[in-house]
Image 1 (cartoon, one colour):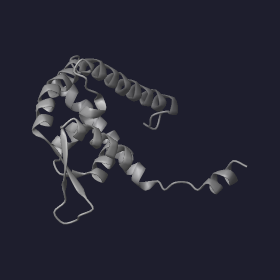
Image 2: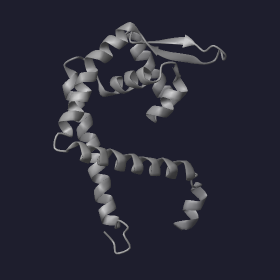
Image 3: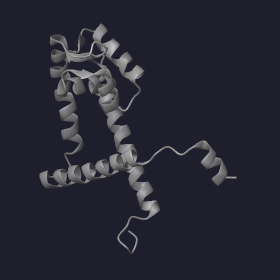
Length: 166
């Protein structure tokens, strides 16, 4: 840590690497555990999000998952083909379709949820309750800071980059 209490660039990069590696390993482990069910992490993310927010629109789901609307549409199409999700018309705007989990989707969610929760419990097994809360609080703080930063920064015009790097 630098003398002024800030994190040095090398420490910050190391932290970023740790976060990325942990996330990558979490995805890998989850995919391996649900593969035998013919299930994927992306399917879980979509199903879980719609379970948490029934009636979400495709645009809202895309924003939550940080993907393009067309990509979210393909996810929804696939889970709708499986019978796990259904689209319903919005009550006030005919252009919007609301997404809901079907009975079969709830059954699949009930099967996968214990796997997801068990995995989180296992990955945090080396931490006591107090450390888990501290880790969660710290990561929420970092996430909020990053969300604030993302909303503040306007894209840099290509001309500005060309002038700066000329």
